[in-house]
Amino acid sequence: MLFIFVLCGLASAISNRSLDPLITMIARDFDVPVATAALMSSAYAFPYAFSQPILGPIGDFYGKSLVLKSCLWLLTACMAGIVFAPNFETTLSIRLVGGVAAGGIMPVTMALMGDRYPPAVRQLAIGRFLTAGLTGMVFGASVAGIMAVTIGWRSFIVLAMGFSLVAAIGATFFLKLPPPPKSNHPHIRLSDAIGGYSRIFSNPKALLCFGTVFTEGLTLYGATPYIGNLLETAGQGTAREAGFVLGAIGVGGICYSLTLYWTIRLLKRTSMMTLGAILLVSGLVALALSAPWQVLVGAFVVSGFGFMLLHNSIQAEVAELAPQNRASAFSMHSFSFFLGQAFGPIICGFGLAHFGRPWLIVNIVVLMGAGLLASQKFRGHPTASGAL
Image (cartoon, rainbow, N blue to C red; front, side):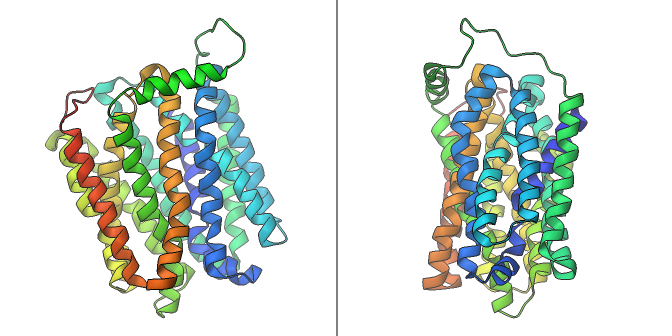
């Protein structure tokens, strides 16, 4: 079963960040401004975010595995549609639908793992599962840039579609999970969803969890679609170098996953959050200073490690907000994270256009401040495992 979860994580991660290093080439191919092409990121993140409040309760009521399988097939169809899209408007529209499909993959998979693993080992289990997603990020960002420069940006979309197809087939035929608890009525009602979210937000840690990941998406991933353009305008690289820089975030995350067993024994969870908040801004600092792309790669490896220190600690908290509504809780987590990613490129694009690279200082200050605030506030709330 873990192998199927890994396939799902790979498919979702590759489709998620695969277009970021290609933004400049897409803009050139469709003859649109870079800021317009960067809307491809928002077009994915907005529906991903706003589908979460719906998909979570559906997963809790009808079964998480049903939602997962359906979304994998829809994502595969969307990737195929982008391959043959004749213009930017069509590509953007398909990307919108793809965002909805992806919204039912990673959050639902993590909720399934939350059901399967007890609190004492849950953070370790989820952290190791995320290695698959991070590997997909590294592979997607790096290979997308290389393939775009050599044989065209659509070639990588074909490859990403193949991963989605394999994951969809694997989940359909091999993912066997127990059915959801029986209800007194056959169909989900609005009151069921409202009741579930009420239980989640009655937990005082809920707003802290969701607010922090919203800020992560807004500041860190609001800037990533512009890395390729910033490198190109400075004469420091193309989509290939941008892919290496973006892939470095995933490399840092993989380093975190490989050392997680020892990290959670050496550091309290809130200490992991504090360290993560400090390391997380490394890449944005280097980007603001117009560092060479080789330095950016190293800085974003550090950012990826810091991101996982903070983000994975919050995921472990989300799993215990309301155990009977775990799919809804993880969906709200993803809603917040991707809502930040949706607004981020719009705000960062405006800031870069009017203030240039110094605008990134705003992202840096807000991102570090949110992480440090979260670590401080969580010290007053005991975790499920008791590991503060």
